[in-house]
View (cartoon, one colour):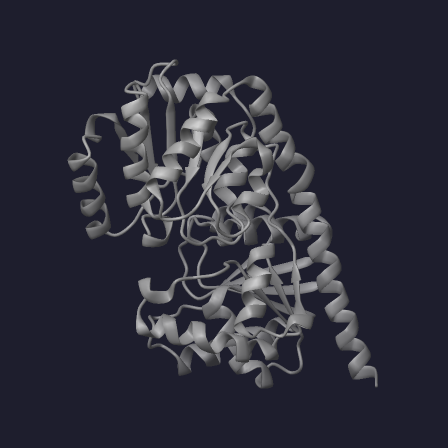
Length: 379
């Protein structure tokens, strides 16, 4: 197959990471893959190129660069002449749907990466796009969701159910694995004693990740376990960082809290944790939960998206926006810490969410769309 993927950028984030993993896997299986990006310069571009996947930057100049950008996108697609166009996330999905009549009948597959989203946290432009997506999705030959919750949410919004399938994310369990070496090195560099309970939240500083509830829960846990240390790892807006820093100070967590920007080598960081926490108010399939579990780190998560399904009986689940319940979930997992629990967490990812499984299922789905398109043309 010759497949052209389209995404806004290749910055370091969950959906972008999965696109790189998928295209690299398909390329390794002999398919011809290229990725067109609205914006160039993402941290994951080098990894994509190293896998032999071609990168096609489209040079978008901002939100209001529309007509000229659309022309560049159409020219790119026509020049590539792929068997199939696979777009990722709202912006690329909507743009491709809008331009489908100009793309010469090339089959279109959408990639959805979220579930139920509270759009009050976003601006009017993003809220409008969110509302029109279900209607625009009728232009897609197939919509691939990465979570069961995402599929249910899409159908509830009005997406055409018969065109939606679910293919969960794949985790590189050779990269993400337990490591006593990494655990000791990171804890030593951050001055965290081996016996101190150390847990944290990993992800961008976005209101939907609910770092506020995490900090309140951490304060409650520290009352029970005063030696506890905490991690917040991720980038975000200056105002969000200031607000969270102020809240941590008010809660008396400043000395116990370790801040880190987004890091590329997360396989070195996860093993240092005793527990990974997700306080999100919405998720689809959370890569960072699954990656931590692959490193043998159990998780306490909120019951959003497929988080509870991923964790299974290897962690604990709390309702979203409930710091007291999240604190109890954290304490529950900390009380169960053991080599057996770590092994069970990793085994759950190895058995259910491998990269090979994700690549093969996507390959079959895309091939089916191409075959059906050829059959229609043959008629």
